[in-house]
Length: 305
Image: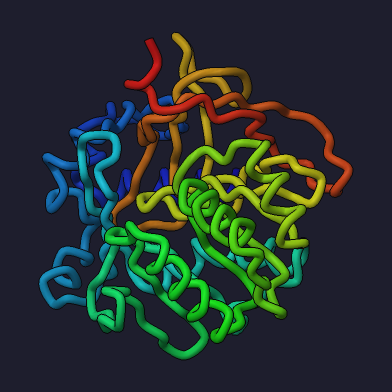
């Protein structure tokens, strides 16, 4: 709880937005803070900078991350570069210790963003930069495009995929239908952005012969929880503090995901309403981690009737 106490004390002293949302007192805890909704973040975006960081924003010294707006409310979050690296470090440590994956490993990223990418034959849009092959998947429609895409992937010969479940299913279908060889160096697949069905996870793992691992995160928070080799989704407590709300705030049980980022000091997100319904368990895992586990992600709040 040291990181949680540290950022709460910081925002009370250095962030005017949160100062107006709390009652002045001597000591503060997480229960003193109101829930931050996505609409609050959208409406107060430029007014949420902590002291000294607003000038960094205007001098273009902050990193910007924007959500896709899948919840209906797109938002942007700004980071000091140092804090952003610290936020991602906890995930990289787990990738290394659990699956032997390093930042220098060659990977394929499947994205909807075509910024600064090169257009090649068959209208494929992709870019190779150092050890990363970025592929725009927004305009892939016909099988010829998929076959050419798989040729490019196999030529690149990555060690891992960073991929959405929907596209993983399409890619798996093409590999199976045409009896294509998988990249010889492939040893890990990370699923992001959507709920990963267990059936798809098992099929893909069996076909590619590698672990298919679920990573639950967001553009606002970076990684929230990560699947260990024993298939439990451990909350990355070095990056986030997670509560569920179901009439009261709890650190276990089923409810709306309420998340506090422990590393973003430029634009702190305290008790942020992520928009998901999750279940948290406090149980021991065979991997040795004693952190809380997200046992299920039940979908978006507005998708549940």
